Length: 120
Image 1 (cartoon, rainbow, N blue to C red):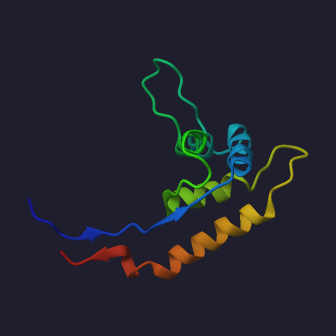
Image 2 (cartoon, rainbow, N blue to C red):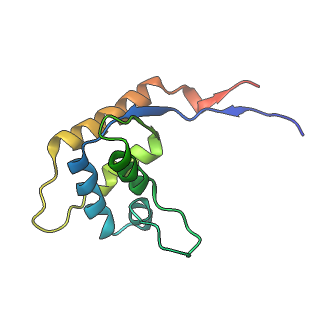
């Protein structure tokens, strides 16, 4: 085996309110994109699958509280931003949440290194 390169994936520590997570779960449930639906998927007994990462965020908040810092990758934050792009009928997107997700994506972009690879 030979190590050719080390891939760098930036992540951010973020907190969410319970209301924000509940809103994202509702949006994810009926989202047109399978990846967004998977993010909010709950655990089905004995199906052998893991719950989605958004469901994990919800579980952490229920167990530890809203002060818990979730470590999310660019892709996960981008998925959350995509989830809230298509809210259920008559639901209002919390603009503060949308702005904070966008700000986190911008911060990760600003701190990413070119090609996201470090020399071995």
